[in-house]
Image 1 (cartoon, rainbow, N blue to C red):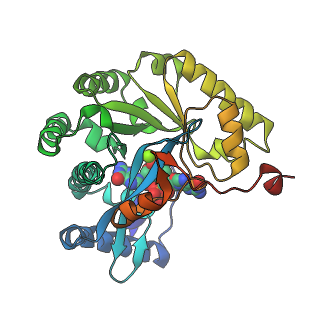
Image 2 (cartoon, helix red, strand yellow):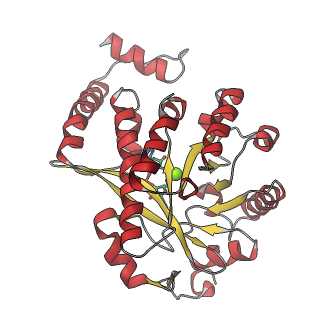
Length: 303
Ligand code: C2E
Ligand code: MG
């Protein structure tokens, strides 16, 4: 029990006091169980991808999707990746699951090609362990061959936390991936410790502004200014901007006026389970344009 409490203290970077209580134990047991069950879940097909569309803010053309991992647990139902990923990240199994996500993403692209949705891209969120894994580049090259997918249709998302650990190594690894033709995005931009100076030196294609800023752009002047200056700065550096977490027409219109490039969020679509993807696209896509944006007026939401 003291060991359990000690590990909790260490998770907070130490130098804190943690007293053991039973709740801590229940949590530890659940984490151990989830970790153990994850192996079987992968075998049983309980993991799947949900695909969230990214569209061009001006033309509403569908550009591609972000792959988001889902776990449907036989007893507990759907478990959020925000819950299971931090638990599994502590085990070696996570890397195996990360590679499964990559291969599955290629299969989704192949399915889209076969159904006539050509040239779509897919963004995959990389954990820092996978980004640093020496076999990543080799694995990706194998996938390009196996599924006949061009490298520029794969966009690897890295969070700021992954970037700051070792700038030199990060820049080197990014350059290696870019040389293969792969695109690189910075996810959750603004929530970490980004420094503009190293952003300038990194071979990044796209910046994804975190939804916590998008959330406030219509009502909060500071958020609006932060987002506008980020868009201007990123454009000046020759990169593109994605706004994450757009939830209504006001945010959507404002971001379009602010010259943001791409849009992602519940206003356009929630992540779509892979097994419903094609039937959803059949209803929503005409001439490659996303048709189903809710038609409410901005004044109806924000009088
Ligand atoms: P993320 O990469 O920032 O992904 C975006 C998250 O925002 C997704 O949550 C998505 O459902 C949610 N989202 C999108 N639009 C909106 C919106 O308009 N409003 C709100 N409130 N939320 C929105 P999800 O799928 O629960 O994933 C959470 C996080 O889990 C992801 O954040 C990512 O960090 C991690 N994750 C998911 N799949 C993977 C994976 O395959 N590998 C790794 N390493 N991490 C993953
Ligand atoms: Mg992401």
